[in-house]
Amino acid sequence: MITTIKHQVKELLAELKRVDWPGKQKVLSAAYSVVIVSAFVGVFLWACDKVISWGMAYILPHH
Image 1: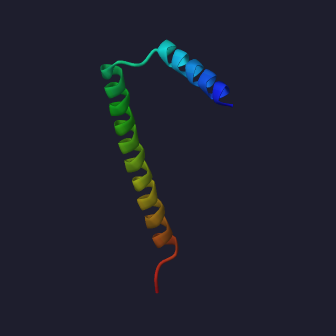
Image 2: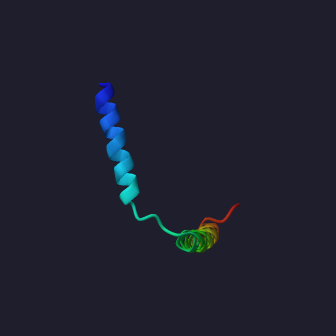
């Protein structure tokens, strides 16, 4: 069992050496994109919620 674990660790380390890791600029660019898209989606969902709430209040007024 120990030899199997050692073999798997060696394979893992060999595979990690073959990985093409992204550079700092690529990571930052992707992070900025995620933040911007998340902000737009959040604003869009907030606006949809407000419009639906306004519509429901108009259709079902409080007495």
